[in-house]
Amino acid sequence: MKIILRSLFCILTIAFPAQRATATLLAYEGFDYAPGSTFINSNGGFGFSGIWLTNNTTPFTSMTNRGASLSYTDTFGRTLQTSGGSAYLTGGAGSCQPLRLLTNFYGPSSGTMWISFLGQRTGPVTNTVQPFYQRVASVQLHTNGNERVAVGRASYNTETGTSTSRWDTWSVYSAGSGANLFASTNSLTNVTFLVLRIDYTAGLDSAYLFVNPPDLTTAPALAAASATNTGISDMPFDRIRLFVGNNNASSGIYAEIIVDELRVGDSFTDVAPAVGGGTAPRPRWTTINPSGTSLALTLTGGLGSNYVIEATATAENTNSWVIVGNLTLNGSGVGTFVDTNIIATSALRFYRARTP
Image (cartoon, rainbow, N blue to C red; front, side):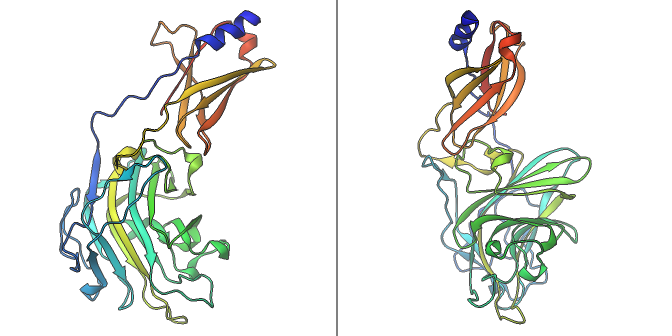
């Protein structure tokens, strides 16, 4: 037993993730238009089949372009790439719902899509009625006539089963219904980087909302999602609609929102391009501790990072690695993987960790 544990401790290895050769950003809109102008009829960015449409919105002044971009910096000092200005929408003159058709239809029977944007809720609030922000304000993914999934907030009187203390936070909801709303604890009032992951299946789909992910270079684990909408509805889409509601009949409150850096891609790194800052710590095995017939291995690395743990009886055969588990590091970048009963069954084992 002593020889086995000593060998295991000395031969722990780790595999560092390979760099992506190319990005696959599928659609992008940075609102790089003249400050103070409406972005309706504009066709900047790429991945769209046409211009921004009013979609029954009047007047054009409800949608104007700001001269400055919103921004986000992760915990390692890396900044999200931005360009141009940002879109400002207000429902003060009536509901505002511009949309733009994408070049492709997204939503296969299986696979994953990523959507991201910078957002900030602005405008009037009420101090007498919860929530303070009364009206809908969100970025929505649509097919023709069908709102599939949205990030933002539904109108307060359409929500059910949600604590009043969380009405003014970023949320994800599906099928155009506040009854299908799942809230984070992150305030709408702050400039926020929002990343939506949609997992498609042959049945109902699932959406995971990540609010201000701490590492722009590493896809967050599903367990790190700020809000999860699982198995509620199908979520294919072929257009993006921005939506803010008009005056609430009882309170007179209407919605305003600023949106920037809309991206659609098939991986996290496609929709979260970063510049500058420090380097995320590389994953490293730090301790090994036997516990009965099991072995506990401690790994350090990126904050909240997700790793696949693999093992083999011989490191010389590169085809012999098999997956033995998964590990998500905590907010301090530390996690422990337990290989159950391995001491009783294996005399020699190599370990490595890699990104999914």
